[in-house]
Every structure is written in structure tokens, then in C-alpha cells.
Image (cartoon, rainbow, N blue to C red):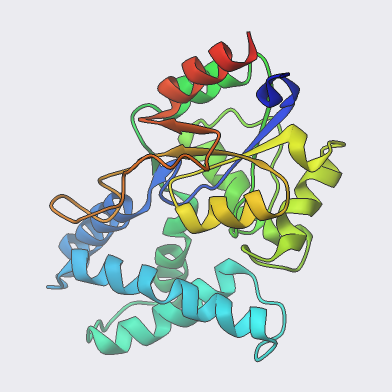
Length: 242
């Protein structure tokens, strides 16, 4: 029987948590702001609350309760609420907007850049994130991420896990769904991609939600590849395609 992974021509990546450490980046930036502005806040709790607002905000768009709204705009809506909840005062509009754009300045996991460079030797690598195009482009520039292409839910006016995102990415890359592998640290993302006919690569990120947090790192037989990190993914994909 022919190995189906030999036909994979492109890898598309979830970004927040899979490629970059959103939580650590937000905490570090918050602490710098706190020192500069004398703001005493639990920045870890702030980061977790900001991220916790992400899915409910997207759900409003996906349900039609809110018209198409970019992640930058959704992040700002959540941030405005958090500034009140955490009693953060004295920031100018420019400072608030700079804080909102921290999502453009997230740091990659230690293996991300080298692993992506290994992977792109043989296949096209692209984002497939709910982040908007400007956010993903600025993040790639800031973090030195060597994408061949930036693909975003914004291009389809649909957020993952809507099928339009996965099928739209394959179409724009000139591939059949089975020629594209979705790579993510989040199993729900991979299951949605698999339902659309894409191949799947699971990469465990045990520290996404901080040390000591329980994260499902178990391999799944339904995924085509289960990997520890991007270097392990590159090695396993190379063997599967040999």
C-alpha cells in the first residue's frame, strides 16, 4: 500500500501555542510595562484571562452575532475589559494599542526556527492561524520565522474550525486536501482538519499554559504523525516520505 505521506506537498501550522509561546511572551511584556508604569498586577493571571477571552470572542463571529472582526480587533475588545477588571489605570491610547499588539511580538518555542527550516527543505510551510495577516506577518518578522507563505482565517472570513479555513488553505496552495498536513498542538484543530481530508501532525507543547498545568500530550493513532517538537516532526516526516 502506498504511503499517503509521500504525497504531502505542504504543511500548514497553527501558530498561537504551537509555534510561539504566547503566555510567556505576554507575561514578560506585562511585567516590563508594570515596572515602567508602576502597575502592580498578576501578569500571569492577566495573560490567562486575555487568552480565555479568545474562543468566546471568535464564537460570536462564527455564530453571526458579530460581523467579521479581525483577531487584532477582538484582542482589543478583550483588553479593554481586562483593563477595567484588573484596575489598570493611567495608560495612554498609544500605550494601550502597543500592549494590544504584543500578539505581534510573541517569541517562538526554542525548536521552532530550526525545525521550520528543516521542514521547508522538502515541503512548503505556511501559517494557518486565526491571527490576521498583519499580525502573522509582523510576528514572522519579529521572531525570524521562515514561512514560505502567510495564510490566515482572515482570507476566508471564517475562523477555525470552520471547514472553509482548511479547504481554503489547500485551494490557495494549489493542493488537494490530502496533500496538506495541518500541524498543531491542539487536538480539536487537528480533528477538524482531518474531517476536511487534510493529513495531521500533532506536536506536544506541555508548557503552553505554564509549568505544572496538565496538558494532553498523549499520541493519537488517528493523527498521521505525533511528535515531541518540530525537529522530531521533521525527522518523522522525512522517514515517512522516504
